[in-house]
Length: 229
Image 1: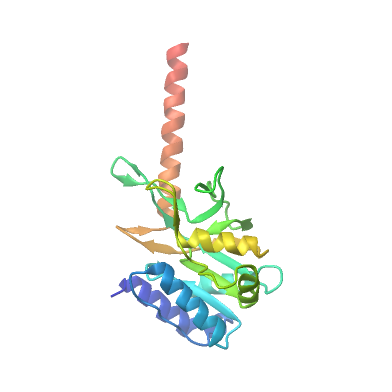
Image 2: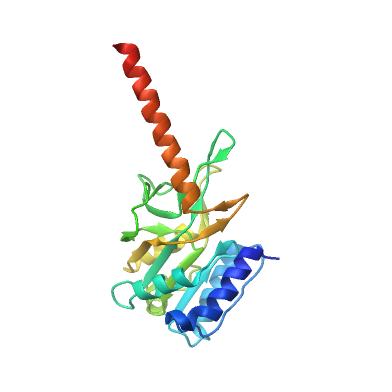
């Protein structure tokens, strides 16, 4: 079972890929509930059996479009940008009843168990990042040799935890291993897709939420200023 919007977006994008100049060879599906193990299975299958030079990872709750597919394809380069991610939004906290949207692209935090969101999100820029979610990532096959040389006989997607509150997910572990292997990662902040959660997380919700937060902060500051006069 997958989200209908994911299926619609994937099928439509594959069918329309030739019209935007993207050569799609085939699609590989890995399913189950042990995501770290399944990501590694897919990586090894692509590395050892598939003949394609590029792999686009798409999670089953991300809505791909042909426009985003084209943008990622045109941004990626096997030498200068071997790994390029698009942007979708996630939430870890609530403000009242509303989930707080944040982009799933990150910089290193102050400690091993911390990351910093790339927020506010730059508009329509290509930026170097440290980590991202694996939901929409295009990578060149050159990363296979880099990773296997730097981390022989390892699962590149294992999870790490020190406690219930100090935890590193499989996607962050993967990007840290890429960085240790000398592979740079870029995000295109114009390659925006919907993330199907309790409702579609997208750039419209992200922009509206944070514009409202900004207005409320300005209103509060104005009221406090009037009270002190």
